[in-house]
Image (cartoon, rainbow, N blue to C red; front, side, top):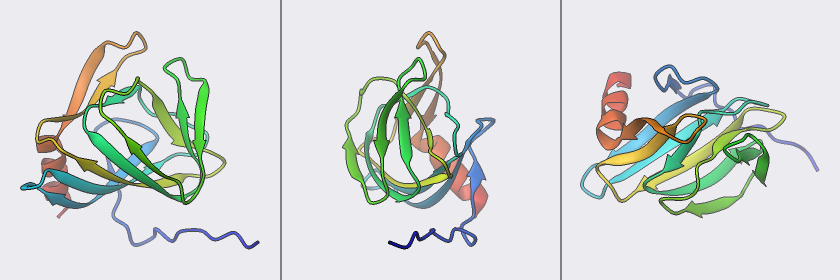
Length: 143
């Protein structure tokens, strides 16, 4: 079977603050229905900041392996290309990253105009949040 690669050369990627190993392209924000559609790219063989999803997230893996890790950094789950998942709010904290290549995942984030993600330190203390307002500001800055 031939291996295909998603061509993301025309996607405008943005850094998320000072966070490493992750960029985002916000595709659409529906403020009325509280829905954000975005592409996330996680670096190969890396892990992003420990976090918890506060809003409902629906994901679809477009390229690579979407890897999820426990708070201690142990591999917990591998999602292959074509995997669709619904991630309910208040799931356990985790890290995400790519497999042997950068992974690109479509996220549909739904249901709140407040906090979307809690960012955590290694002891699982909240060190920051990403909100709907933060996401709107990023989207407007990219326009």
